[in-house]
Length: 141
Image (cartoon, rainbow, N blue to C red; front, side):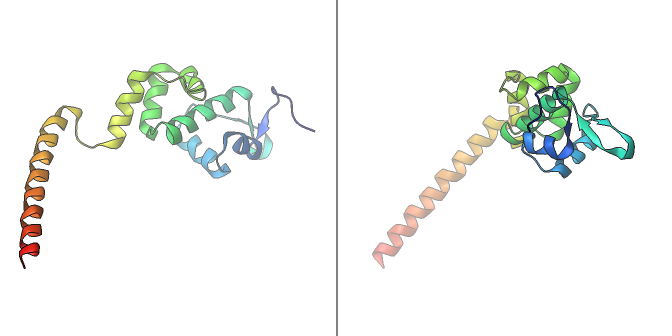
């Protein structure tokens, strides 16, 4: 018999619904202070429906949108749990998403990108010229 939508979930049920292993939920509890399932005697975890929505949002941000753990922490600090829960449905703040994704994909500040691009274009032209000289030398030999 399936549980109702408002029923609490055990860690195994929550992990299955969110799509991550149980140990990941335990790890997230150590990194995200806002993930606090209710604990019964013996330390058994029970997740509320609102907890599951936040967990789905955290999963979407980390796995689908390229956020880092610090980025999710910052989003929670700046926008609250509602923003995380909304991320499960694809509702993330564009300004935070783009800034976090840039940070996740590069260690250089965005303001240095044009200089780097110019340098890479120069290197590419030099390599293409060297290849053309090598091709000419090989065809002459």
